[in-house]
Image 1 (cartoon, rainbow over the protein chains, first blue to last red):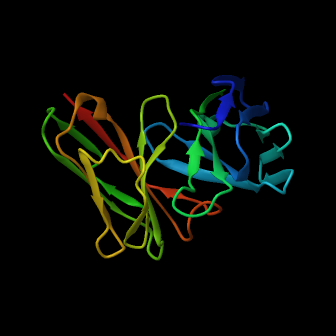
Image 2 (image 1 turned 90 degrees about the horizontal axis):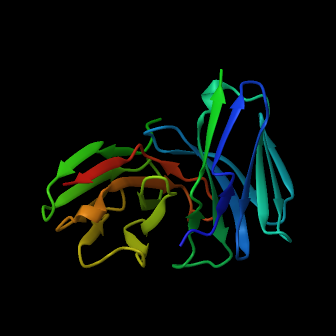
Length: 114
Length: 115
């Protein structure tokens, strides 16, 4: 089963605008990660935020985590056409050992119009 | 530095035929993952290796799927016999550590079409 649920499913914006994508999850997590997937290619890790962190930045990316609401958001500022891709949130569970794994959501399709 | 290498990139087979996918992780990465990704969905873990040991294969359909990582480096995922529902992209990933708090590096995937 996929724990993370992204919202919206699809987003279309103009180049230069900001894009905000949300992820909600159900059980306690150790960390939450965001990945990007360009058409026909593998996933690329963007950013990881741990359960004891509330906000993290990386270049034009800003991620927030609210463990009380079990939700995260990814903000891409000043979007570019090259940001067009699918974005996935992935949650890492609190348990260690054989049953621990990253669980991916269904993804958000972002289209940035030039 | 080379990324995760997968081959083939595309494979078309008839149902009931066998198929194998190969993955070479990033050098030095002890943990290797095989994921299945259906269209419009996120990746779902099939199996995770730490070195040559399969530490999580709970999602691997063992009646038809098998995997190996004999020397703790490259890995092979096999399906025998393939079914129509196996059509998907099979992704391989690797990480330096055990993965939960580690960045996973993904290969380009193998797109399997079963006819």
